[in-house]
Amino acid sequence: MINKVSYFLNQKLLIIIFIFCIFIVCFSFIKVNSNRIIFSETDIYQDINIESIIYSCDKYDIAANYPTTKNKKINKEIKSIIDKYINKLENETKYYIQKDSDDKFNLLVKYETQKINNYIISFIFLVNYSHGNSIIDNEIITHTYNLKQGKKLELHDLFNQSTNYIIELCNISKETLLKNNTIEQKNLNWFIDDINNSLERSFDGYSFSNKYLILYFNSNKISSKYTDIYEIKIPWNHITKLLKTNVYINGV
Image 1: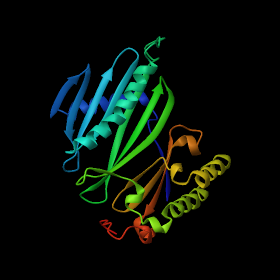
Image 2: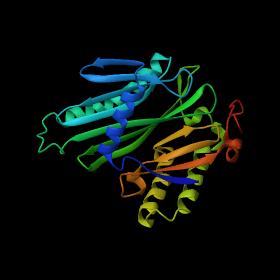
Image 3: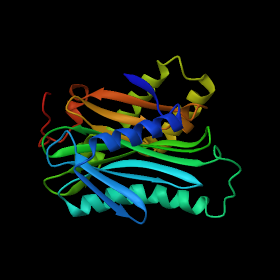
């Protein structure tokens, strides 16, 4: 099944709502770091907290939230994602001359959490970078970890190397995309060629839930609209034969 997900349709409204919600629910911990307000609250999952950075100046606004775990190495890697986009924003606006109050840059980072079991967890980051009412970049980034081992997981950690699982996943992706009549044929043809040539590199991300392997494709590959992000959900029971025998997945 393929879903088209549209994010961040009204940047300023979402940022205002995001900031308001943070102020309402995040009284557990507040600190100031380099003029940025950092909030901390508890995630819905045990042993996961949420940190949120809120910052506003004449040239840009930032609203970003991200997870923190009990593992310092994982936290450092996750925080580097946020820092990358904040640094990009700061560098690109360093010599920027603002025209009016509406002529600002905006960075909005949100994330979702999915779990296979108590140890394997996926973080899906939704990053939007805009200027005024114009979207500059809209993309998805995923990281999956074994929290018990403190290890980042890739597809090959779950799949049997002798099964040609990448070919299988690419074929499933192509078959699913070809059934979708909302994608322009020209864009679809380009993307099918990209999958044929790039294989695993054509995936912009993947996450693991207790029911699905989810593959993500950013809008610039399939659609002319920057707000479109596509995801393909592959039920685990459709690819059980490809998995390593020691992989335990709840509910399958």
